[in-house]
Structures are given as C-alpha cells and as structure tokens.
Image (tube, rainbow, N blue to C red):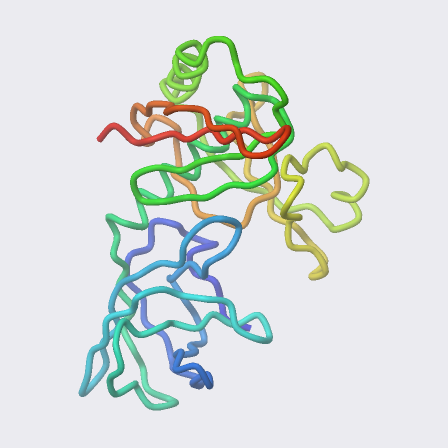
Length: 239
C-alpha cells in the first residue's frame, strides 16, 4: 500500500518517495504520496516530480490496485525507473482551493440538514446534491448562515473509529450515493468545531483546511432541480 502523506499532513507541499512500479496505463507507483488520488468527489492532485536525470509534470493521481496511488503523467515522456528516488511537488494553489471548497461543502451540509445524494469539488466551486423535494425559500439566508459558520474560525480535526462503530452509528453518514471506505478496520472522521462548538462530524477521506476562516467568503449560486426530488446547490469561492 502507498503511504498517504496527505492524510497525515494536508499542508505538505513536497516530499521524497521511491518508485515501486509502473501501471499498464502508464501511471507511476511510489511508496508514499503527497498527491491525493481522485475519490469522493475530489479531483486528484496535479504537480511535478523530479529525479536524478529527469522531471515530469503530473496531471492527476488515481487509485490503483492494492491500496496504491498511481501518478498520471501530463504527457507521454520518459518515466523514472523503479527504485529511483523522486521529489514530489504539489500544485499547491490548486490543492489548497480544493481543501477550501471541500470544507465549505461540509458546512453546506450543516446549513441544509438533508440527505446528500452526490457532490463534486473543484478549484473554484463545488456542489452538493440533496434529497430536497422543495427548493429553499430564502437562498440568501442560507448563504449568510454558511458564511457565519465560516467566520467562526472553527478548528477542523480528525479522528478514527472502527468499521463496527460506524455501522452502529449510521447517522454519521450523510451521503446516500457514496459510502465511506470500509473494510480496512477503521474509518476516518472529520470534525468541525470542538465540544459545545462542534457543528459537524462525518466520515471523509479528503483534504481539508485546518480552520474554517481559511475558506474565506463563499456565495451560493442558483439551485437547480435534478430529478423528481434532487436539487443541486453550488457554492463558489469569492477570492
């Protein structure tokens, strides 16, 4: 399995790794990765790797067999050989914007406490689909409440529970379409706020900012109807 450095420190921008293999599709496997692999509505990270004798732009990262992360080159080029030590470097601005949007979407699920049927994260905007038969009456109120939560500058932390503990607490899972990864014995929980100030707790494998104020102000766009009961709510970063 690839050691997921982004899981331990979402702010890590560079790190060394050793190439352990190549995939049939042309991906690069390493023993450790700062690149988040596409999943849970969050895109894979982009950036650069360089080694003695070469460098290669990375377009994205994807999950590979056996719990590994494959780095996908941006264009066909010579790849580092197995056993080579490479320096991984993130496109930090893009990753950080994903972190801001992802954390903002967690807070969106707080101000709209309905089951989530889908979602997508981008560098400028993100969206959640809700099981929402009727549209909200006051979108501006939702936006004001969301920005008020962001402005509280709440800490964003993580903890772990066992698969059995999650199965015994199904209310922790807000998403109807995607279940949190289980089967490895434990599940990561992302918590916003602590103690009396806690506003959200849910399973999540993505990357997040350390405090909500880091998100900055956001705006909620037009709410779209998607199917008989689904409605799509999009938000955008304002800076």
